[in-house]
Length: 63
Image (cartoon, rainbow, N blue to C red):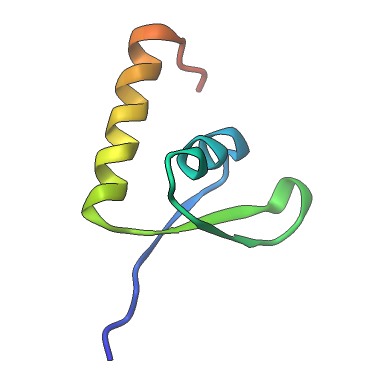
């Protein structure tokens, strides 16, 4: 049996944007400690890249 790999995200709004695009997540933890886990696929990586490019073009990065 193949083990699924998951990509973990701590930012709620990024997780919600990916959910809007059709990617389902699992929540682990509560409150500020919540981690959103997505199945790490090629389509998911493409969506992450696209969202980051969009944010770079239209928004601002906060680190």
